[in-house]
Amino acid sequence: MQKTMQVVALALTCALAGCQDMLTETPKNFLTTDSYYKTAADIEAATLASYQPFSRDDVWRRWLLWDTEMGSDMIRINPDEPNFGTYHPGLLLWTPMDGSMVNPWNGLYAAIFRANLVIENAGKVTFVDTKLQSQLIAEAKFVRAYCYLLLTKGYDDVPLLLTLDDHANTASKTRTPVEQIHQQLIKDLTEAEANLPDAPKQLGRANKAAAEILLADLYSWRSSFLKKSEWTQAASWSKKVLDNPRWGLMDDYLAQYLPANKGNKEVIWMSVSSGVDSRSSTDPNCNWLPRELGFNQAGGCEVVGQPTKWQYETYLCTSPDPLKFDSKGRIADTTAIRGCDYRKQVTYRLGGCSTSSAIGCIVFKWPNLNKYRPTNLGVGGPSDVDFPYFRYAEAVLIYAEAQNELGNQAAAVQYINMLRARARKGSGATAFAEPHDYGTKGEAMDQLSVRDAIYQERNWEMAHEGKRWFDQIRRNSLEPGYFKASIAAHDPETATRGDLKDFRMRFPIPGPELSLNPNLTQNPGY
Image (cartoon, rainbow, N blue to C red):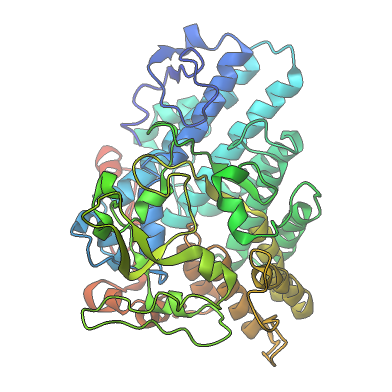
């Protein structure tokens, strides 16, 4: 963080480089704040720049995605991935010096720094449109809050930097208690929600519903992981999203992810990907393309991993769909995925095609992620698929969970079944021969049983969207031992080759930060 913030008086010149049209454009150079923050356009350009780190390699394009996906019980290491530096999160073998731990910290603090530039300088600039001024400050507070929630979810106490002076003196800062940070987030997000537009000014920018679902997520985390019993607040903020007619469930689960449907009613906030070049494409699909398609332009990439056997087989089906393998260990039956929960059919595929004629179209050794489907089918260039941070479906599930924890099981089940009904509908044809609604087959309706159904529904609905790791961590607080038991049962490779000690549920404070700041302390176990 200190290295990132060394020159505090520098500001991003995105506007001068003509990059307001693309939210993830890389800034070209720097100017001093004295010569830069003169107009409303300068402040808006700085606001756009605050979003940029989320879609870069430090956070959701690579490192945080790899940590949360492979660290969970949803993903196993791809057997063709040769680089330990890529797959070590799958074994929970991260250390304070690994890029997997250092880069998310740096990326999130870079976004915080940029947000603080906006918050501190926006009031010094004359705006003809004072509503725009309030909106840009609200966006910056939203960005800052999102970063700090992720930081506290991963690292617990972290330095709370709210001013440029704080950034200039990071070498003397101590770790701020999580409770103090969260109270600041509640203040920031409540103020932001009041000034954000109902519809985002530009795809990828914050809107009112994004602040509301972020508050709901914060209260859900506090109620579960921190045992604060703030489920009423989680229900209230998620219900604001559910009651807003601008947002809702797409009829087709797949449709919300397709590039042709950018700006749809379900994806509330996302990382926008253009498919044009590396500066404006998050390329989520490249994290999943198996090397057996031919590395790089032929169709393969560095692979985060493949679904665990448990993850793949846990979806509801009208009949059992066990994978059948041939004598060489390759999938032999490519029709097995049919007849299952439509979300399974959308999320995975059993084969694919390479641009290399020597490889052609093949059956994969293990199911491969397919829910992010770029126009170019993921080969031969950057992706144009947006990566979702928050969707309407998550508001449904947060509300259901809050109702269950408040003792309202019937209400919770009603919202679970909203998502099952959508999955049953499929792409227009009936995906299930029977309802598969929760409670229709005699499932128990006590709090623990419904909780299990909600976590499972989150797993099916938001598979590979960076949610499962955090769900396992917070559920462990409600049910001690769940984290270790679930990974051991669902991803035995981690249990045999990795490290399942409880301290692994917290990320280590990056080693470079400890070297630069003697006032920081390390998390236990590292």
